[in-house]
View (cartoon, rainbow, N blue to C red):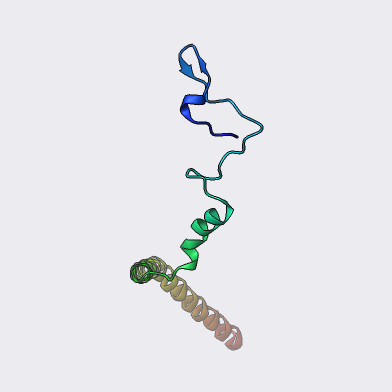
Length: 111
């Protein structure tokens, strides 16, 4: 696609027709007529520079927040599951006592 100066664009009914392409002219890569090296430098400069301290501070704050949320979630999970686990343990103990009584009555022959 070609970029032409505004005064060279064709007009249709008084409006500028900006859909024209000129095959002989090559459009610039980025506004300001940058070349491939300039574009590469602009794109990679983000990752090639040293990480700023503010990023580390924000990362530690976000990590701390996630640890707090995880702790609260684990505590709530324990609060929800604990009564169910206690009930299962009680029922298991009751079933074990019942099985022991059944075993004793069969050994002694009493009902």
